Image 1: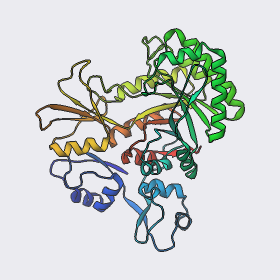
Image 2: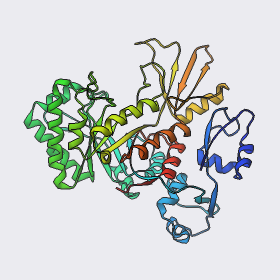
Image 3: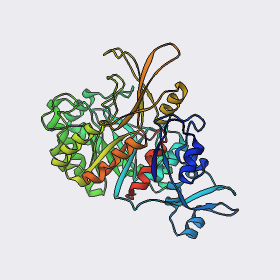
Image 4: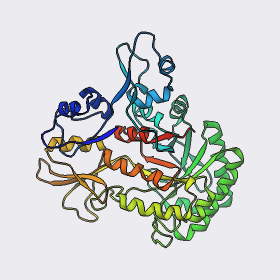
Length: 427
């Protein structure tokens, strides 16, 4: 598998001929949004088939897998479009194998999703996951859960052999983190005990195999109460064979101050939890100055601290799956970026005829354009190169795996890289 960066004057046919593949193969693998209008600096993944299968009447995934001595999961990961198909049709072509090196590592992959995920996107993504984390259950200080509609997502996950993780977060009905909700629960022992009872009952009833505690912006004075809550949850879940996962802010030392960081005690929480997600993204964010969402140099600093105080076999690195478009000039407290997909970022570059640049330090692509109204913009996003750089930190730091925030859109390059680099841990 090769990452190709489009050069001036190149067309899709020229690139396909260079690698001895068909243009259709490149379009299908990359879900290429602009095959007739490639952008200079655009990256795409090239997979050179070594074995393909043309579907005939009566073929099923199981019979094809048996014929080639592969698994159904391998077929679905090589052909994500097929996971969304109700049944195969004669004449369709399935990629069975392609030129590649053996996987560099085994990785646990968690994908975060909202209940309103597009069901086609959901089915295409599941074969690349170990667990799916459904966002999010809320709660009250009295211990009542605020439920979500998750039954069909859980059922579909189990159809693919992907168990669910329940996400718990102190959030308002408007889906904003609320420090007070968490505090009120921490200081109400009866409410906390009732909450944990309700969590366990819901997990067992719905088939959840773990709880993801995503408590952000906790009051620094509540640090010990937060740690105690995590310990109380773990003590209930562990005897039942259920996992405890905690999401942690991206810290580079134990001395960092601020509402986002102080209550997230890496050594203490890491010692309790089965898994921790280091949220290594959102350096570039909706209301912040334009920059990469997860600059590699910043991510590396967080991982260096994380592995120094937490068991590496517990650490998941956060992977962002979104992009931002900022109008310029950026004015603090006034400018708001637009959240878009990485595929939409490519389409905009093609629409405005601009060249994609690549920041070597951040290991991230970006470009500038001027819209129809004369307003300048800058777009930072992820491509095959930046995702490759991030994913290779997992074996470098010997981490357990990654958590993808979020899987609401399907970004082919990310999943082709996961498929190529890792043996995906089974849930």
